[in-house]
Length: 261
Image (cartoon, rainbow, N blue to C red):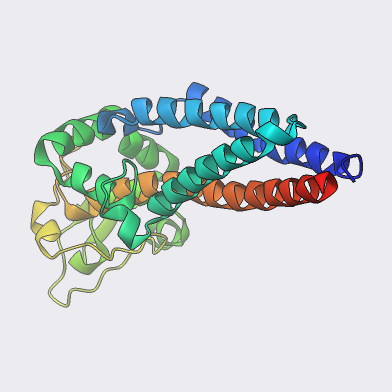
């Protein structure tokens, strides 16, 4: 029976490979945009190191054949996977997990971005990244209809252009005419849902390159959405991997226990 479970051990090893791949990605990839201002490098380092340790633990447990060490090894793996699953739930926005203030959870990110001192640094970083300048360069030859048909990132839509509800007229990506009396907007991409936009953003908007909509709620929402998307994907990965590895280790454990009886 123990020999029959050898393929399960090999399967466990193969399925654990994404852990080390994601660990390397977290440890060695650059921060997205101005993400470092949210103190994400330390989080990425800690999570990457944790996944590396989990990879080593999973394969160490798989190599255990001693009946005396089988149960302690299995329990240690289960506890680790539960922690991994819990962190994954927090990152995808599970309500109960969010209340615990787990770094990179949607609620944690929203609180950080909502901090005015932090936001001052973030908007300065966005401006210095030339995101809006690049947007203007890419779309300088487009007319209003062509511009409105293109898809733009949440940061480009939220920080570089005025909100749709302002009804401003397109000149170029970062220069807009005041709204007409009928409030009809003759151009704006619909690629970004402005669910957190307020009418105050219309008064905040400026055609000055160093101002634009960097102080708008739409800019904060766009930056927040960009960061959340990345960490939500990490959360989904943690949940899926935790479930898969849990099933494989349970099958192996139960199979070995039956083999010893």
